[in-house]
Image (cartoon, rainbow over all chains, first blue to last red; front, side, top):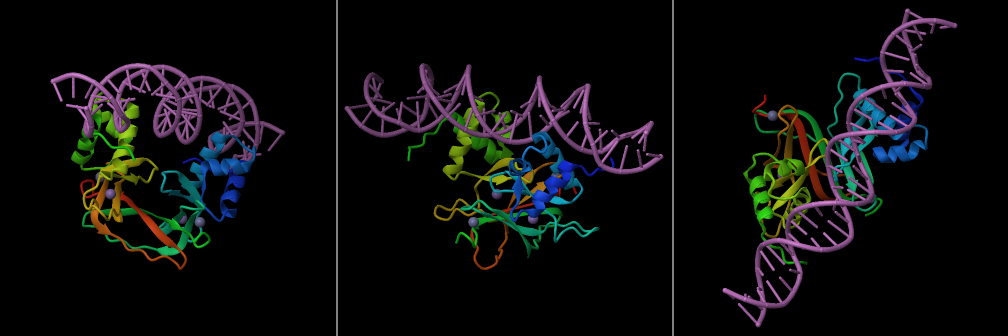
Length: 127
Length: 127
DNA sequence: TTTATTAATGCAACAAAATTGCAATTAAAA
DNA sequence: TTTTAATTGCAATTTTGTTGCATTAATAAA
Ligand SMILES: [Mn+2]
Ligand SMILES: [Mn+2]
Ligand SMILES: [Zn+2]
Ligand SMILES: [Zn+2]
């Protein structure tokens, strides 16, 4: 329980992620900070932004973790991520389909915490 | 298009994966082969087993790639993996819920290729 | 069974990705 | 302004995955 601070790097990184129309990986972000901070700082800031619930993680189909802003999900109390993600095999764009929620029902005994739903295929721009 | 051979390492690795009640990562597998073969061989055999459709990949919620046997999905012609996976945050077990399929509908313009569906939470044994 | 072919392996080197320790910096409270 | 400790940079380290190549061995052919 440390008190978070707003630093230049943190502000810039959040800005980059929110401005993007696609989810970004650590290296994508590092490529865009353009020398403002160290590579290690990017790792640390991303972790911080996730735990502060400003952004959320999306595991892409290749196992690479990407980050996107929390928009539909950033209601103070309920922080849910039950929306779909789409990963285009052609243009490689990974995007949140914010208003495509999925409700799954599991066998008895399972307690759901988070949903990780990513669909690969061809996106509208590439199709 | 090379003709695959059945080697000791390949047989043992497939055996390990099929005997497991959970999906295994490369390092899990390497831990279990107990010196039978090299680390590099595990990587190569896993790739081979995937392309031979004996096993399938599951990207866990942390981005780590795991492998599980193909059972419900190994029908000769149709090799689909549209079933759910469950990742227990307590015991870390990652398992296939073979008979829990999900049908999603996407906005117009998207062409679906593959589904990656993993739910995290507490599994029955841990709940 | 023996021989020939080439898939598969081991190993070392390499490359990429992520983590850690620690001194120096700096945001924010006092 | 002074104080506190969160944050950062940087080097070192660890972890993870890949590649080249000589050697081994599975399988088919003789
Ligand atoms: Mn999302
Ligand atoms: Mn599965
Ligand atoms: Zn596309
Ligand atoms: Zn469990």
